[in-house]
Amino acid sequence: MPVSLDQILESTRGGLGQVHARRGTLERDAADSQVPPSFRTALQKESVGVIAEVKRRSPSAGAIREDLDPGERGALYAEHGAAAISVLTDGPYFGGSIEDLRTVARRSSIPVLRKDFILDEVQILEARAAGAAAVLLIVRALESRLQPLLRCAAALGLDAMVEVHTAEELDLALEMGGSIIGVNSRDLDTFKIDVDAAWKILARVPAGCIAVAESGMARAVDVERAAAAGADAVLIGTALSAAASPSELLHDLTGVARRGR
Picture (cartoon, rainbow, N blue to C red):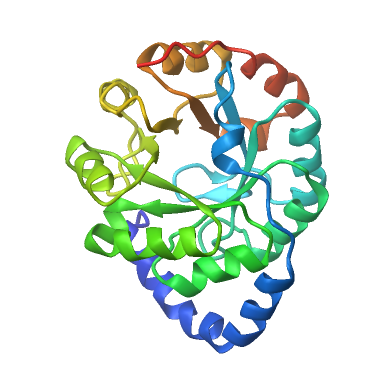
């Protein structure tokens, strides 16, 4: 049977107890860690920023690159023009871990985004302790719980990218204070992609916010289309993680001029 978002969220809830048990250590580690580079600033350049992802597998694509070395791949992304790095930290469905994020953050000078199904403040603390500069908050998974998690991220000095898929979710994200908006063309209920619908939502993101296009992009022409729709940045995962030559692909994807909204 296909994996559902509810299954993923239930799995995440099941692991929260172990993270809470480490809260004291996480608080000390977060207090001792260096201030991360700004995720927001990294996406405010003249060209469309590429958030390059470290991803071993996914429910939609299956195995992508199970032997991916996160530290090496993150360093390569930073060297070849990525604006930021996204690290999948979900283990059961994406093959990632918080240690992957820690490794990438240690080896890279550019901001690192924790991409996971964040439901609890302790996961944001865990991200900060591991060196993240930002966390992903998914409206579909959080709804009214989004606002306190946005406040938690801000209190810890982290940026938050708020992910939406529909116009209604965009309205909620903005109402609750989201200012870095990720528009995911993938429906998390069906895992199907509708890029055209995503472009329409991107165009509605206010000019004062940062708009990030997510999913369904693999080539320079896709970045051009995202820019035309108003994207300030793009998040590219499967294509870069699976690429035989990620440095060449990243070179092709970078340098597209932003066009504004």
